[in-house]
Image (tube, rainbow, N blue to C red):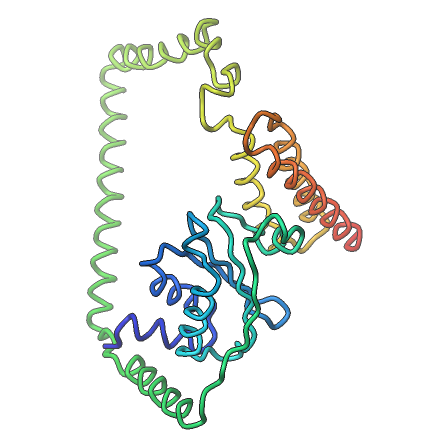
Length: 293
């Protein structure tokens, strides 16, 4: 069986960004530095975050990251731009925000070029990866008998659950038919909480009338962030004009929620930036909708 750590390193050498991030995070765990990365115009944009600036000292961090990446020799990765900043909340569009305002977003940024190493070293590494891949493909597969047994087990389980539910419903129907008064009393008791919940006193404390401080879900900043994350996924799947109009409406709603953040809130500056960003995304989605009409 192939060691999971070796398998992740092999994927990183093949150019998998998620595997590269996992290897870097494992290596930098003791220093308290976490990384995120994505490709942008042929350059691997790497973001390093830590709670304090002392953990992100450029003369120390850059050579260490270079050493890790050159030991991996990831395929198709030659230029790496290392960005650093104090850790903050998860940002879905962190690269766009860094490009838009690098002065206020970053502590420092440095682009490096990885050494490809010698031909003999790359040959040995490729041979080792091929052996690991062969070991994976040669793992014993479940026998047809084992698969049949699993199918029979799940069929029996589902069939037993269905039969139990049918018998339960049949018993309740017979009980209701034989004891109509008891069934009516049970139904009457079950409807009482609904009557009570519709009273004025209950509606006075309903979530719609609660103050923003009564519930964490009333935080417009958090709602806007969640809506933006969902909208990114919806934009990736949008194929029609109607779908793009829905995406534009969602971005506009997220922008409106960010406008609700008061100036006294310590997130006010970030919220104002996102008001503009979400508005721009809404306009871009409207343009896509017009193209498809």
